[in-house]
Length: 110
Picture 1: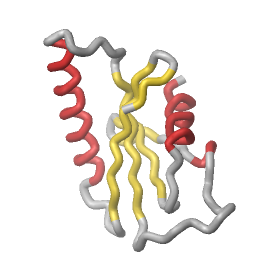
Picture 2 (picture 1 turned 45 degrees about the horizontal axis):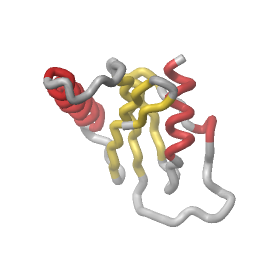
Picture 3 (picture 1 turned 45 degrees about the vertical axis):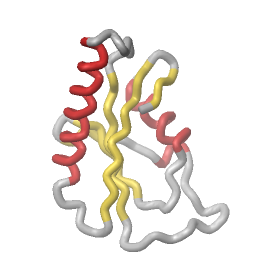
């Protein structure tokens, strides 16, 4: 969860090695659990956050490797697309920069 510029972004990360399987169902389950927990906090007046915007990130690869210096993708490489009511991106690079993820979510939310 990231709060930025008056918006609340929730990133649902699903890590797979090869077969993505039921990743979307697992992300949607994570979204429901998060909505439930935020609802409980609001009910008990422990949280006054804006409505969250959810983004799924499917991270996949066959094996974990360190990135070579200068070969990582940044910024505009992260693109979200609508998949059964959830904005999702696929990511296979060994590095995922949190700032780039938030900036991509902000671009998508506009």
